[in-house]
Length: 166
Image (tube, rainbow, N blue to C red; front, side):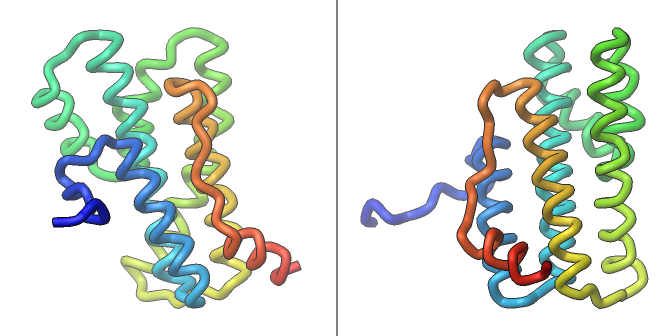
């Protein structure tokens, strides 16, 4: 096989999975697949929450990966991971402030995702751009807490869609 073979998804790090999801989201936006883009943005946000939980529990508290994986499945979804796992870990005032600043964004992302996947709602460009923008802010703010300087790949199509929608 040549050099252009992709690493299997199961072998990717959470950061690689996050960047891959974000790249896929860009393609969905380019093809005007607004509802799918919202679902992918929520998936990327959930992967970012996984990164935060793994860092807190595996790297800082030295819990076993299999136990952390169990907790992530138990928490079930973005809201569960934030409310059941990350919020209880944010005990200092400064950490609580960081958590509060991302929680509202996460709620909006999750609400819009749920409209798509549980109600079959079709989203429009304006709604998709809003959710993708919130997801980008949420993801970068959360992940930078653990990986200094983290930035999602920026794709030209996102910038163009944001400009077109104004």
